[in-house]
Image (tube, rainbow, N blue to C red; front, side):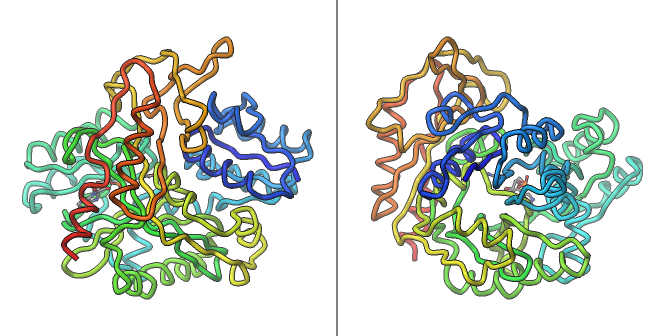
Length: 423
Ligand code: AMP
Ligand code: GLY
């Protein structure tokens, strides 16, 4: 079978590595892929948002199955277009991808169906938003409605910062039309848990939980990034919390999407906060998380392609979805300066013996040499029997991947380790 994966980051590299375990797959194309993925799939220089070219390529190359992983093409209707051309896909159609594409939609969905989340107000008028903020409790959280490369959320610790965030989004259009509407919501506290799940709209099967490290600096300082590292499982996701999430959040979300005529099929990602009042939804994503996928899929013992096809065909209840009881840690090596200004084009060295444990994100091949080409460059993932050894091994891997201006957080997994020791 010929499979096509749309996207070109570390997450896609992890998906492709896992797909390769299925012997039925004879060929994998990555659109556009990247210089590291090129070792595992045939990269085709078509951008993930160029839906017309993606469909043309799929038809011309007799693609049997497509996996669409990034948010932009999903929200823009890539799965709709491929399915309409007769190509079975893993991923939601755009009507369901809106659960990530519009925070106003997802907040209203949660309110309508009683799914626990932070209290909030929606604003389309800047002056109203500013008036509301004059008396709103501080800290407060301001979110642009649409996609904003993971940067559309500001936690304002002072009223002045809240005012300026609203002006930046609504007046200066920092995130373009994504800021035409904004959500202002209650600031919640508690540990965060990421749960990716498979769902075919009838059955929902959570994957192993994970913990992201979103801020650029050690001890959660600095700017928000796409994610600087992950561990799985997440010690805060106890069996009791998991049971509550299933009853209060996961099943109600699947049912709510069906009731809205927006059946979700694919990977539904729950960004959760475990508050004193129980688990609450911080965000939904309509896709695999990055870098959560880099720790979750290496722990998946079942065959990914079989599960994906079961999702597409509405047979998820029959599929085997089993995870190892080991631990995984992924340390992201980034270009110094990320998520703001950074240099790229530096040659990279990944020793052959650790190549299978490195997921390449921002890298390109230039005259046959692998060079850095993005903010997040590579994810070094170790799987081990204990969290402690997984962390140690992941950092040992990170030490062997070399490029100028490399930067990583030094405390990935430490919060989870502390939590494990408290339990
Ligand atoms: P998001 O892009 O929605 O995942 O938000 C980015 C980060 O902002 C989350 O991972 C949380 O750490 C934080 N955050 C978002 N919403 C809230 C909230 N209501 N209260 C506290 N922190 C939040
Ligand atoms: N790591 C968070 C995300 O993928 O949105």
